[in-house]
Structure formats: structure tokens, C-alpha cells
Length: 346
Image (cartoon, rainbow, N blue to C red; front, side):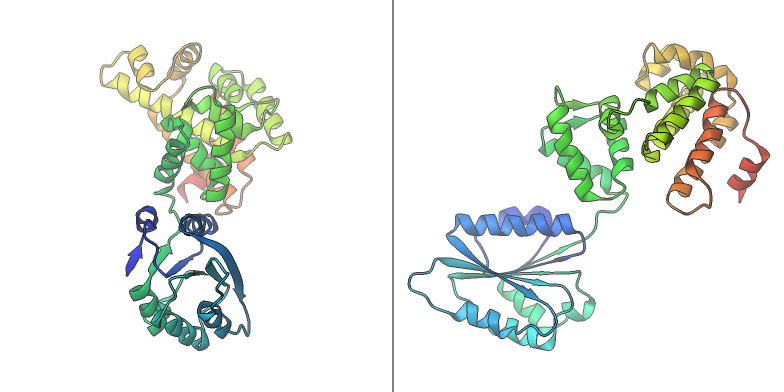
């Protein structure tokens, strides 16, 4: 009947098919799709639900018998089968039999991990495709994540600034369930519908005594010892290093963008406004800009990227040690050492 994607599912459920197959390895997406199917079924009179867990030597004839069973006093029924492994030959035969003559009073919901090509070319898969709906759910890629989160925020009545969206993406690192949980928190704490980077950071930071914006301000103002104490405090309080990397990289990118705008003849104040920077932080950045050449800022960005790789295990370094180099350099206490340059050039 139909191969569906998540966006098409709601429209398709206005008139239920007798069989649905939901497959994928992203738990949140699978769960939400199944919830949508169950909800639509309940609205159309399917008030009972029979659940099977297909593991090991599961007898698939139970599914066929459940679909064929007649009870004059029973309500319409959802037959849900949750599979943890692959569809066996016995499963295939049972599903073909079920699809051959489905009862209008029963809805079969199959839930499985991602299916391989062999499964998609099988007879039972084609039978389900002809009789019902198939929804194959793919993980959200890193490139797709910002749009996915932005859509979720808007559905929750929230509008995040680009920087706030970037921060949330960095925070959840592809964990969709964590993203949904953070959005639920935002709904509770947001005073209006707009989510700024500062508000997002306050959520992510969990009200730590030290905060990343204070760290950035101290570094840019040239307070090297204060910035270093704040960085150490963030580390001691268990702050997420992802947030610190994001805040420092954001500051370096802003400095670089303002320098570039100035080189093209734009006034510093206009360049700052275009970057969303206003007093009192603008005054700090104005003082800091003469300390850096464009090449130094590019190296600082690469150092932030190195910290991110170290966090993810791609570099055998402590991300906090790398960030200490970034903080001290931003504060004007030192330039990137030869050791750092060697690591960056590898």
C-alpha cells in the first residue's frame, strides 16, 4: 500500500491500514511512530492491545491465531509484535498468511530493528507493503540535527536563536531523546517564546557557580588568572566540556568575523551588532581585538577543534588541558606553544 516517511505518517493514519511495519535503530523515532499509530487506532475503535515479544523460538502462529480469533464481545484489537532479531522463515510464512486475509477488526503493528536488503526483498516484506504501510526510520545525521531540533522547538512553541540552536546541538551530540528532554525543560523555564544562547547555556550549565560566559568575559578582558580559576572551577564542578568548547569557539569566531568586517571597511560597532554583540561585552572585545592577528584566531579555532576531538577520543589529550591553552591565549598571557602547533599540523 505505501512506503512512508515520518512526515507522511499522520496523513496516512486518517484511514488505517490493516498492517504496519516500523523499523529502525533510533529508539525515540520508532517509539513516536508507534505511539502515533496506536493513538490513531484507539480513535478508530481499536481499544484492546495484545503484545508479543518475538525472541528466540517464538511461535509466530500465535500472531496468526490472534488475528483470526473471533469474539462477539471483544473490541477491535491492536496486535503488536516487537522483534529484537531478524525475521525467520517461520515469521515470513506467518506474515504472508496474515496479510492474505486481514480482519478489519485487527491491526497488526510490527516493530523491528533496521532491516537489511535480504529482508526488504523477501516475500513477507512485499506482502506487508501491498497490504499495509512500511515506515523505515533512519538516524538523524549530524548535518540534519539542527533542522530536526529547530522543528521540535517550533512545535513546542519556542524559537531559538542560531547560537542557542548550535549550543543545544553540541550539548546533545546526536542523542534525540536528550534533545527532547532539554526542549521540555526549556518549555518550563522560558519566560517568552525566544530562546537566547544565554538562556540555553543556563539550562545546560545546571546553575553551576562558575559559568562559561564569565569565563569568556575574563579571558577577553585579559584577566588570565581569573579566567584560569573559572576554567578550573568549571572542571571541578563537573561542567560539561562541550559547553566550554562551544563558548570559547563562538568567541573566537566572533572576533574573527569582526576583524574581517573591519578589513572590508565596516565600522566596529556595526560589525558587532551584526554578530549580536552589545555592551558590556562589546567593550571587552574592542579592547581585545588589537591583541590578535587573523592567523592567531584561525589557530585558536583549530585548538578548539582539537579539544572537541580529544573529548570524542579522537586525540589522546585532555580536552581541559587544551582549553587551558585557548583561555590563556585569549587572555593574552601566552601564544600557542610549539607543542600545540605540532599537534595541530599533524
